Length: 369
Image (cartoon, rainbow, N blue to C red; front, side, top):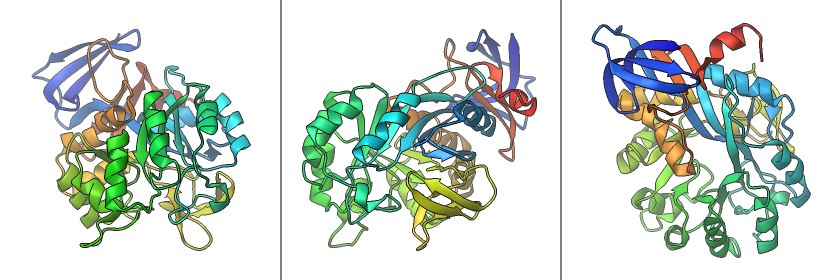
């Protein structure tokens, strides 16, 4: 049995408490007036857009247990491995390797987020333009056959885009709108077809204009969710505050959009089949195009707090909300649930992380990965 004491956010405030862990699950959450101040017990972070980390690109996921151990030690206890646009045959191997797994002391691999290849050639971002193509029923069925894909990001304006949304939603996959040059009307049509949120709002999207609101304007206006990369570069703080005011708690989720460079020193790396360089904060193509982030998800929580968002809501944006958007059972602290817990101090520095009830930090520091 393990007992943690502090102020609990579930993510709603529970107050000073003791959290009892037994056999990998939360056995009790009880008020404890003597719980120490300055210690916050929150759900483990949930990252639904993570392309890689610690030197590993999930398109070639060798060394996956080590990456998952280090992710857990950073505070992320559940994630979707994200695959960027690639040729039709390139998905087979990573999809076979990225099988959902909830081993203790490791970040739980909850499935795959397929970002592309059904994206707009006008808004490729760092995706290889040669890999972009319209969706087909045959390709969709082949990719879904393994049962590991939980989220698909696509551009609704591509030929067959709305039909693809309907097909994916019917198969139980969450669809997000991203890398899109869609106008407002097409964006609204995509939401009506079953898409439920936006992938990295603002980035790789037709921008807002007061007479042509485009995808950004339609998504800010609509009753839908959105993810955002809060690393201080992908989105300015003013835009982050605007997104928070229009979406708010329960609809705006943080993602890292982390790539292989996350957790490493600045240098050269790969994203899918393209070369990128990291400055330790973000990554770029040779022409300067942003190509994912090297900033941990917890830094996004800190940035939201610095932008004036209360701590409980900032925590929700990196725990419960992304889990709800992706349809995952994660992101809260509840009796009987897997004990994925993050212990923070008042400066939001990590004191400990429990993944399946086991301290991921102690395992990492012992070198047992």
